[in-house]
Length: 493
Image (cartoon, rainbow, N blue to C red):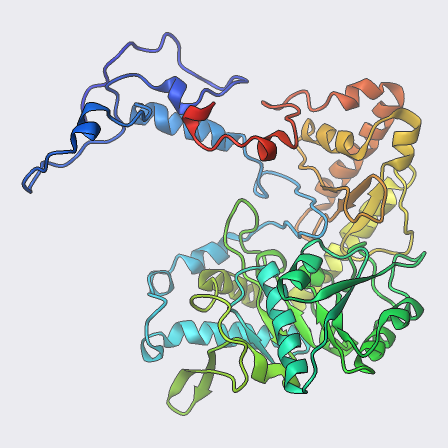
């Protein structure tokens, strides 16, 4: 390693509010690498390249590692504290799942290996599929969709294939007004038209409202239960009957599956297609750009439309087989396999009773937290919530000018990640909160205390909350500036 050249820094960087860029740390002649001795004939560079080296930062290994380590210390994660994002199930990820995924026998498999050389991996897929089907009440599943939105598209394409096989060309997919934003986007991508059904005063889909929009052009209904407001759709069997009466299909958005594990099954409610977010419900890495998995499971009458090939067990082992009327592939290979392996490890570690306790404790934590916040914030739909609930800062805004965004920013000063804000759109100044089952009573109490304290301070000194956060390296960046004027390279600034 060559000796660093250039002027030495007058003082080491330890923390501070403004982390310099690599360009600012650059000093001519410094390197974080060294080439091995050349063992091939040299080739002359084009003259323009030789005359003008690329303007890259020149930084020592020490400064480079310190720079990214300091940035890493500013990143919030589920390993550091509460991450109560509603609708996302940001739970603690047990390290035993990572231990399993790091096994070289699985980690180093090439995805194009023929089935006889990948029997262990195929066994993982079949075992995970069997558990998922038992939990959801479905017959078979595919692991090809690499995340939830891809699972939505898969379900919609299966709906299309089902209707086309019956000689029908339908165009309308019904979704509730509280649906996830990906639902209408997926509907459009699949070539269908979205028809919205409004929630009633309970925050649920009314059978009468659904009956008024369902007809012979209805492809199906996209719904999650509990719904996006954290409420269990009490009329789900009747809703399913309304859709099935016109031979439509019910698609279950698995974002909220965490609330019903081992307690209720979508298949028993009348759903035909279920996608599951393994990277949420089954505690694999979620967020930060990590891989996801959105397997789709279906009832027996729809298995022939599943993406393929699917693993099938026969007398000689496990082989691949394409369903007879498959919609084709949804992924270059067979999904994000190591995420499936992590999820299977989680399922096996907990077992059936443990998975049921996941649901019970997530619901208990959410209901306790909602009770603690009653009075400090509005709870627009007071029916007992499931694993999450929506609070509103609308009254706080009217009385003090403090908005949901201000409350979320103030939480950062208390070491707690902000909940989901301004969603679902049917609630003004929404704060959507899901504590999950992995947070202790002490953490849930700390979250309740922090939110109550923020409401109290807002009433006494609104400006203090409106100016939050006060202790983070960056306070209030322009939320839209990065999208409107992106800086794509370090030397554009």
